[in-house]
Amino acid sequence: MRNYFLLLLPLLGWSVWSCQSPQKPQTAEVPPVSADEHCYTGASPYGTHADYLIADFLDAIDRIQPDPVEAKSQEGMVEIQAGQFQMGGDNAQARPDEYPKHAVEVKGFWMDATEVTNAQFQRFVDATGYVTVAERAIDLEELKKQVPPGTELPSAEELQPFSLVFTAPPSGNIQTLSPADWWQMVKGANWRQPEGPGSNLKGKDKHPVVHVCWYDAIAYCKWAGKRLPTEAEWEYAGRGGQSEAIYPWGMEPVSPQKANFFQGEFPVKQLNEDGFQRLSPVKSFAANPYGLYDMAGNVWEWCADWYRPDYYAQNKGTLRNPQGPADSYDPEEPNAPKKVVRGGSFLCNDSYCSGYRVAARMKTSPDTGLEHTGFRCVRDK
Ligand SMILES: [Ca+2]
Image (cartoon, rainbow, N blue to C red; front, side, top):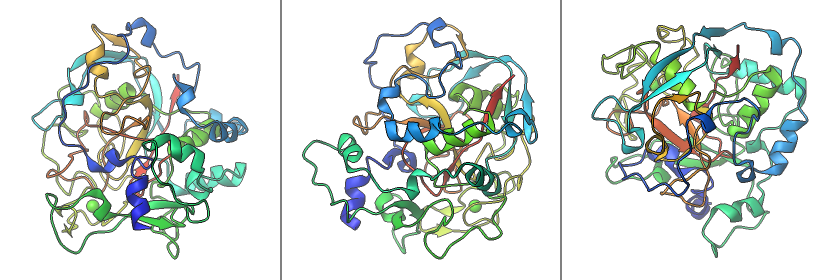
């Protein structure tokens, strides 16, 4: 199984947990697109380049009907007023893909105050019978598209549904270890069994649902009459009206009182000063000025947008309701289209990714579920 881990890293979105070392942004491979062409229309829940996406997964989403009560409910949501802000890196920790800082306008919208919880996701599954991607058999044909040509693949029998669970290595340090040392492919790990077989959701109703991939998040959004936030909406909301803030709470450095993150020496020695070794119940830490909880730490949150490291550099002038690049490109894994995730997780640490900064961008392939990735939804006004 270990060998397959390395084989599958591209499929699983290596970069989301590798928290990449700074890289020079790639030259755009598509012509720059005008701000007007980027205006969010809300016409498609899948965004542009739906051909990147897996038809079977979309079919399952298409069959979901919005719940008439959920689709009208604003319970648990916060109204975000329209406005303008400067999007992008604020301090020396910012990576090249966070530049240039640029002006963005967003329309007003409603946003979930918290990450979607296990209890909420359970209600969705009970109502629709939806089966998450991590619970389904792996499609070898899809796998082939995302790994270099000629890669030897495991047989269908060998490849059982699994997801990735964090396991602290016994020794080493961030310079000597790689993500393969702290992520374990665990058969049977999924949202119902977040740490694998034998684990369950007992006492975890208020924990964010995890091991949900981008498709699963979209499926939930459709049922709830909502959608995923664009990356710009997420950052605008995360800043909470504090235009120069590095974090959702402002300028003060991250601390165990501010968010659920990794204290100690990542990934081997966790001091657990915030009291949460893994996930924390939503609302365990103070909200930002807009009333949004856990915009830093706990779990990475899926956004609607495709990822390109040079997206900010492609555009000139003020962007109005940008919905991301027209295509996806990650120089670290050119074969794997990626979606943006935001906000950092319980595994983030200043020595590593500092993903809890409001400008920090990360990315993963849309079919990947992980123990540290969840989502929250928004709705148009
Ligand atoms: Ca923690």
